[in-house]
Amino acid sequence: MGNFVTGTIVQNKAGATYEGTVYDRRLVLQPPKGQEIFIFDPAEPISTDLSINEMYDLVLVPFTISVQIVSASPMADAPVDFDGWQGTVIDVHWKATKEEYRLIRPELYEGEWILLHTAFGNILLNPRSIKEMLSEGMIVQWARARVDLYAIV
Image 1 (cartoon, rainbow, N blue to C red):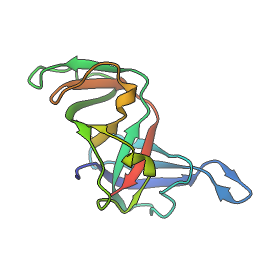
Image 2: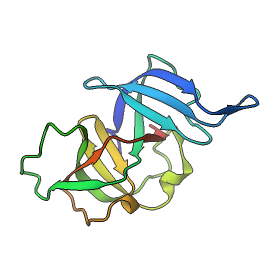
Image 3: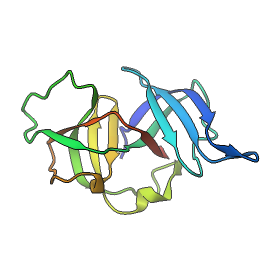
Image 4: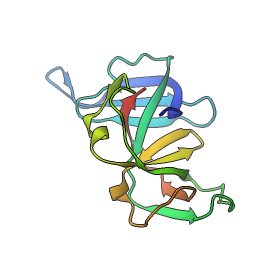
């Protein structure tokens, strides 16, 4: 487990609201290094009680449209000027266990995920969003897209 995306919540705002019910939330996380990450907490948000200026370890899943394999070898140099996300595959069959999280979306328990290491920490990719077969050590990139909150460690 562990080593997911850690940072300080600098914004936690209600999104869609109807008759006093908040249906989703929008957060901004400031990692210790790097730029802010804008996070979407969809239906039945789990981030309601997260405090501003507090540090959290979050399990994030980017909504990806196209993932590109940059290198099939962990030793190869990958482009560093890419204006999107880049990660190294750690595990292609990662599964969540029930006792590891303070708050979680039930969808996290539905099947296997691809665990990647990025400059921000570990994140998960939905294997259904990837056409190519991935293996550990591969480096992949994808365009900046919505990032969803799936768990609070």
